[in-house]
Image (cartoon, rainbow, N blue to C red; front, side, top):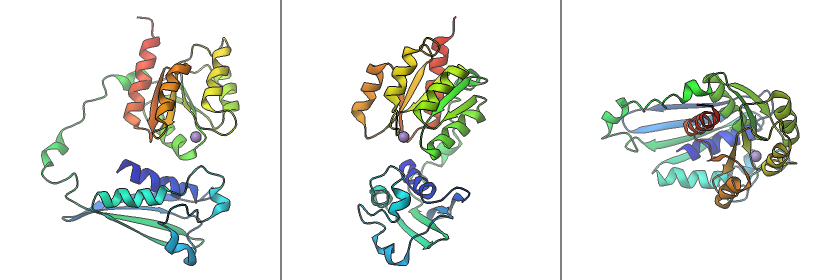
Length: 257
Ligand code: MN
C-alpha cells in the first residue's frame, strides 16, 4: 500500500509544475476503501490515455526527462492494486490535471482485526526527545522525498536544513555544523558516495554521523553504504518512524555518557 501511494504521489508531483497542487484523500464504507490521488498538472492527452498502464510509456517526455523513472511506475502500481484485489482508474483533462482512484475491498487489512486498531503503537521510546533541537541536514534531489523527510523531522522538533545537490550539501555541512546528515545516494552531479568522501576529508565534517537513503532495488548498495563509511542506511520509500529511530540511535551513540 505504501508503494502504491508513493508511486501515485511521485507521479502527481512529477507531472505538476511549480505552483500547482497535489492531493490525497481516502474514505471507506462497508464494502470498500477508496483512495484518491489528484493533481493540477499537465494531464493526459485524450489520444494517450489508452497507453497509460502500458510499460515504458512516458506520457510527456519533455517533463519526464528531467526526472528519474523507467516508465514502469504505473504498471507496477496497477499490479500491486490488483494483487490486493482492487482496481485503479483515472480521470484526466489535458492541461488541468489527473486524478487516480483506487478502490479496494474493505476486507483487506480491516475486518476481523478491529481490536488491533485501538492498540497504540509503542511510543518510539525517547527518540522524539533525542531529535528535539538537533540540527539535521537532509541531502536529497527529489522534492517530494525532501518534503516528506523534512516535514516529519521538523514536526518532531528538529532543526532541518535542506540541500538539493551534493555541492550545496558540502557547503552547508561545513557552514552549519549539523548533528547528523541524511543523504540520498542517487543524485545528479556528485552522488551520495562522493559527498561522503569529501565530508570525511574535511576535519570540520569528518565526524558528523551520516545516514544513507537508498532505493530498495539497490540491495548491493546498502552494504556498500556501510563499507564506504556511512553509519547506517534507510531504504526508500522511507519509513518515517524508522528514520527517526535510526537518527536517534546515531545521536545517542555520539553523546558522551
Ligand atoms: Mn535521488
